[in-house]
Length: 191
Image (tube, rainbow, N blue to C red; front, side):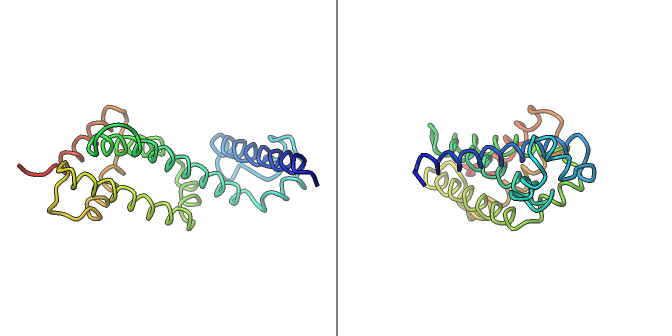
């Protein structure tokens, strides 16, 4: 097959897959996990059920793929902030602020959906990656004298992520910003 043909087919498959993920997420948000079937997803995407089954075996696998994509997008967002302008403390504040916002957006997930989404290995892998990511940022802050050095960066990373997990229960972005500020205050070296 010519290269152009292969690229066109791959792009088509990617577009169908993306549409299936978006339609499924919207249907689950509207009808709940139990209210979504493969037939309903196929109808919403405009493809046949047989075609849908070529992409995914069941609703849960579609949700897992959607969640994996969400996690990858979040990690990319955090990486862009880490690599952005400013000193180590400014970049750390930006990353922790974005993480708190991500936690706030997660709030409102149905408990049943959360149980399905958060039990996969992809979540454990992302959590390990995020801990390492924040720990490295903190180590840079220690080197610059902007982060305390009496606690290891690994412990501080766990502190940050657990503290900012509380942003999931906050009602406003202003409250999330205050939580980030309190967390950053706990990271500052004593003078």
